[in-house]
Each structure stands twice: as C-alpha cells, then as structure tokens.
Amino acid sequence: MSLSKFASLFFILIANLFAYPDYSDALKSKKIYPMGKKIFQKRCSKLNTGIFKSYEALLTFIKETKECGDLKSSYQEALALYLWDVQREAKVERRYPDLNVSQKEKCPVCGMFLYKYPRWVSMIEYQDGKKLYFDGMKDLFTYYFKHKEGIRNIYTRAYYTQEPIDAQDADYVIGGDVYGPMGHELIGFQNRKNAKQFLLDHRGRAIIHFDNVTTAMVHKLYE
Image (cartoon, rainbow, N blue to C red; front, side, top):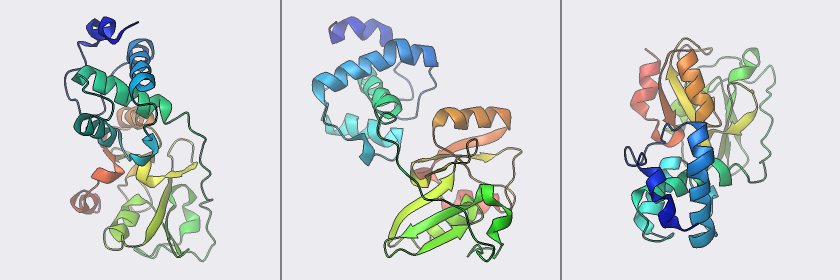
C-alpha cells in the first residue's frame, strides 16, 4: 500500500510533535507502527537508532536532517515512534554490570552506607575504570553535574524489575509518594510506559528523561 493511502489515518498526529505522544497501544500497533515500518524500510533502513538518547532527539533528527526524505509531520512522527518503540527494542539486549556493593561502600555525596539500600544503588563508571556508587539518582546527579569529564557509563536500577539499566537512556519520575533513602528521588524506568504507570499509581509530578534533568530540579528534591 502506498504512503498516500495511510494519510487519512494520521489526522491526530499533528499536536505536540516533539514530546513523546500519548497514543493508545492499539492505535500504535495497528496503524502507527506499520506506517513507520514502511517508511523505514523504503527510505532510511540504515539509520542507527542507538545514537539517540531520547525519542525527542530522534524526532528532531528526522525533522531537521531530512535523512529519510522530506516527510510530512505525521509521517515523521510515525517513523520516530516505530524506530524508538519497536526497532530500538528489537536490538540484542545489552549486558549491564551488577550493582551489588560491599558493606564498606559509601555514597560520595552523603556518606551513607549503600548495602542497606540495594534497590536504590546507582553507579558512574569512568573511562579509566574507576567506579563510584550512589544511594540514588538524586545524589548521583549532584555529583555528575560537577564531574562529567571522562565518564564512560552511568547505571541505575529499573524501579519495577530492579534490573540494572543504562541511566542515560532512562526516564525518571519525580514527586509522588515513593521515597528513597534520602527522601524525594528521581525514580528510573527503562521505558516510558512503565514511567507513566508509576506516575499515575503514585501521584508523581512529572516524567523527565536523563538529558532533561537540571541542577535546579535536583536541588528542589532536597527541600
């Protein structure tokens, strides 16, 4: 089926083009993903989604570079959603390091012994092999904003599964009724769907991608 025959199905893909859209799973599975897949296969099958840290960055790239052609907004969004939700998830699952710590390990920001709070442990790994562990992403961000040079990887735990995840590829919920060892926290999720569910279940205030976290947001969580 040609691209033009899908046009009538995407009249709702016109608002809030750069934020991750809140479409139902049924709509995405039946209409949006098939359209995005068709565009991907015909126009930009070599695009590497692994270089993008957020859906917003991917969509901006598609819009500004026109690497996949001069697409109308609805097609750009369909392509971005397919690439972010389907193509990216289909890649071979990465192996992440264990975030278990010894009883001597302390958070370099607050001095707390980390073994008491294993579900909140997060870690910065530097290019020289040095590893620093923190009692949550709030303290990790506090350190990160002052010591970004030479960082190779950052890891945290997904709230629901407790599996280690790439912290720089994660979404975080702030606010709500779930607290970490140091009070209010940035609670990490591997995908936006789980973050949204947590936001609703625990009266969270906002969902923020790693790249959009600011020092002001972090300082506010200490209040």
